Image (cartoon, rainbow, N blue to C red; front, side):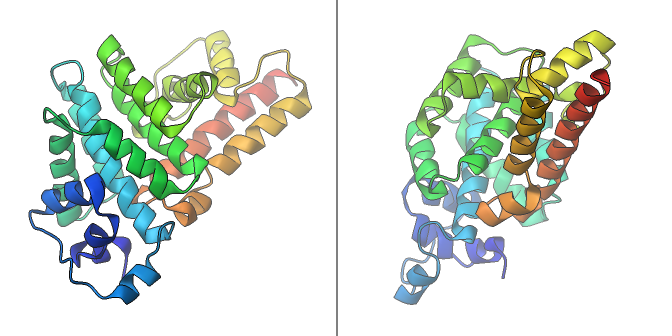
Length: 266
């Protein structure tokens, strides 16, 4: 049975408890059974893949809703990004309704952002690459309407601090997202045009290296990024299987950037 099947059975609402358990329970419109056997706790102890997948799904769509509402209104572009993530995940009807329910809960006054982020980080058990993928999807949502206002940046700053990313790391993640439209975009507004010079600079920014970097340094940065975004590794760490397409498209984007840099160096 998949992680979602166990969510419907109430297992993870019981095991997660806290704000994430409350959110997914409310999204499904029922209270989870708390009379489950102790053997379930042994099977799905903290760090278990399916438990982390549920935490990722719950935190992502609820925080995405909170981010969309940060400036006081949810724009059509922000709604479309959320819908696009759902489409690319090929969610079934129950999962789509749950995702929408989580998004709507995130928009409500009093949404416990810090508590949600704190529990999400705990559930990830130092899975840094998984948390980075979480941030990248949120970044896409924040940039959906073509601008990033102070309220949205403030929410992202809270995410940065809560998940333990440095300012430099966050700037690189933002560069990955901002420049995605010229390298495939992962479905988030891709295929925009740019001059050859601008595209090359963006390729360097995606890789996170300066133009003065050696070929060896460029290759090392490329391999590190590909490892961070490897779909199978991310799923093993707790990325919901439904999001594998997003991770695959991110690796394609990184490869295009690397190929452009390589070609420019002859």
